Amino acid sequence: MPIGSIVAVFIVIWWLTFIAVLPIGARSQSDAGDIAGGTDPGAPVAPRMVMRALIATGLAIVFTLLLFWGLSNETLYRYWNR
Image (spheres, rainbow, N blue to C red):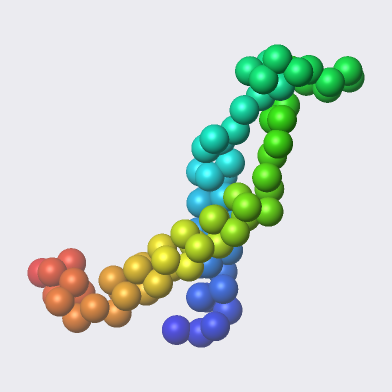
């Protein structure tokens, strides 16, 4: 498979996992009871975006490898194409 296709699939999977990881463990300002002036009460207290991006990257690598393993597995190929 060409490298461009692998990169494109990885980017799509990365964004899907990033969106899925975003709300996990997030605490809003209204939950914490400390609302900063001029901000939305639903804004996160500590977004920890770097940690979330690293988690999404790890999950995306695993999911991409599983996807390409499944697509190249001869047993699964025969099962899907009966």
